[in-house]
Amino acid sequence: MNKKIFSETSKRQNNNKLSKKAVKWFGGMTKLQASLLVPYLIFAFLFIILPLILIFVYAFKPLNSEHQLENWEIAGKSSTWLIIGRSLGTGLVASIFALIIGFPYAFIVARSKSVIFRTLGLTLILSPLAIFTISKALAVRGLFSAIFDENQLNNNFFIIFGMVYLFLPFMVMPLYQVLKDMPKNILEASEDLGYSKFQTVFKVIIPYCSKAILSGFGIVLMMAATSIIISDKLLPNGSQKQLIGNLINQFANTANPFDLANASTLVIITLAVLLTIYGIIYGIPYLISKKKQGGVYE
Figure 1 (cartoon, one colour):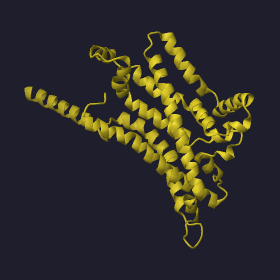
Figure 2 (tube, helix red, strand yellow):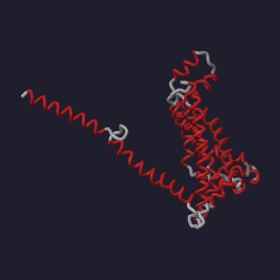
Figure 3 (cartoon, helix red, strand yellow):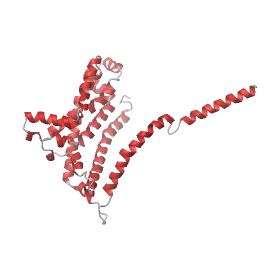
């Protein structure tokens, strides 16, 4: 009788161990987690990986029997790099201004003790996202056209202003999510160490939310540099101040294989340039933090 009970108990323990091992698979994920991951993998393949494969195919597919990639001649034109330079320059300046405006705004809203103030502050910055982007661009253009001459609006300053206005929420939200969870004892410790408020900002708060700053900066830069609406809808004569998104859109003609090849080439060039800048934005602070060994709050 005792042997029978002991054998049944050991079988149950073995079954429990096997069931626990069976649940864990694919890098330690459970079956439920893996099943929830399947729709995202399908979506990523259909709308990210497959389009990228097609872009590379169209960009490197010869358009004639001589196996010459004529579409890559656009990469050697100075006008192409002038437009890319304008896109990156205005995007970087707009990202800096968005950070200067968004950081104190996010800090004030996140650290407020009033729930009503936090709600109103978030509503103020998020409510424009519910409005169609083209409508916002046309509204800003109409406002400034009523104040200034339209010919004066075709400049980089107005482009940067429009970028900051349209993409500021994407800078504020990552900062707000980090700052609202920042422990109070960090600020209290800085006061105990004799830091002034100015020193606390640069030595405590900014290192604490450095990852959010980089995230918001990268998002605003990517969206601003590749925007189509800024040049087409915000400026009275967008052909004079084109961005890389407008140039790609000009060649986005599926009926013409040569235009499609040019568009694919421009997409690859833009991806390479932006990914390089994105790697620099994230790579340099990472290397600095590694050297400091603990200079960045987690």
